[in-house]
Image 1: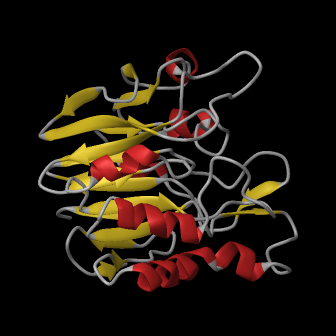
Image 2: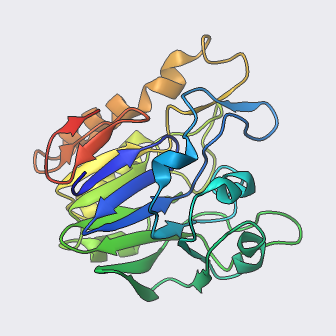
Length: 256
């Protein structure tokens, strides 16, 4: 397949780089929490064969789904924020590493570096991570996965290290709430880190039951809104909007 990334919906992205397969925030099935449902095709576990690493950005249900972790094939290594190792280990088939912002670990020819994220950290009354994290994957291409985050000053320190930025631009409810970026704030993040390519994530996947037809623009519009917001700020960042299930060659054109 070569070096490529595939947007699998919400914050689930498969990065194939330098012979290593890294998966972020697996949310594979149709069922979500309460009345929230996945409205795009589920991800068959066999499509994820050969995984080397799985990164969990934080403990919220739409990013840490235990049933999805149990369904993953093989025994990849898991990388999670400090404090979530115990709960992930109950579902994971591979070794679990807890990380704090600034920690670096090597998988194959890639370096995985935990990056601060400005977001909530509680999963339940009894499970709290020290903090949400993003991930910088460094190899022949630098890929930054933001997880869930709002803008934070240290984003500027990523400038010169990010070829492809995966930035959250939407959500699954009528409002985003604290610790999230809308298309405009995500565009500012892309400018701050001077990414060569920016791809929106965390949109167009999860919907409250019965609301998709009534509020299509709210859920399906953030991707293009992000493109427009970046274009209004700079011509340097190339925005690639991928639909769930669509892939992009790293440095190449988007395609199925």
